[in-house]
Length: 291
Ligand code: SIN
Image 1 (cartoon, rainbow, N blue to C red):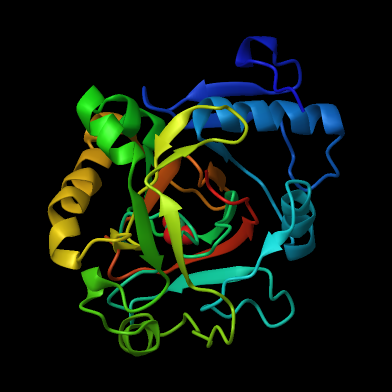
Image 2 (spheres, rainbow, N blue to C red; image 1 turned 180 degrees about the vertical axis):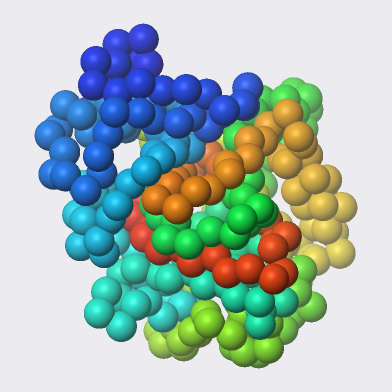
């Protein structure tokens, strides 16, 4: 599908929330079965802005799933249990009992899969009176702002990405951490689903053709290098990729939906509402093999 540029929108309006990207899309009711020409404009808005937001939606699980299926197959999280009646939907729940939140570090979804998620559609059911925002960073800008020398070096490197026992959490398993700190998030065993993958550090977006830095919390080391050899550059790139001018921050309201493109963003769920509850429903759409 050829995406029109935002100047040609006829069925939606968009309003940028930051210089780096992120836009509110107006004029859409996601609970309806959207015609193809409207969907084409939403796709263009996603590609133009990396992450788009819709306010004041009321979505049943079936309606959220119907919208998500327009973008591709639904990706099942290998480690997290979905809702009992809708295994494709992950409920992200944090209450005052929980110290930590799900997604509370910079990452891009399912980077540990051989074909990581193309996009994520997150719907807010209950949000704290203040806090619980989600931050996003534009990985095209992160790549484009590197020096030519660093771009050349990065384009030769591949990363080893894992789905559990992350170094940044001291190698502790999801099961042990979630049991202690995120009591409402139910972990499952991935069985024989592949959860360690090697990906290019610089990926080309299959729809826009632009290059993006492909880094996040799942990256453990460079392929063919030791941890010690990899760490200095990985640390630099992780810090660089979330510079404030590459980011935007979304303030949730009940009924808000965020749809982000995992191929060119990272995100971070801010954990700053210790005495309140936040309940979200998340669906991830399958993507392709990064190149
Ligand atoms: C996630 O990482 O998918 C969760 C984001 C959020 O809850 O804001």
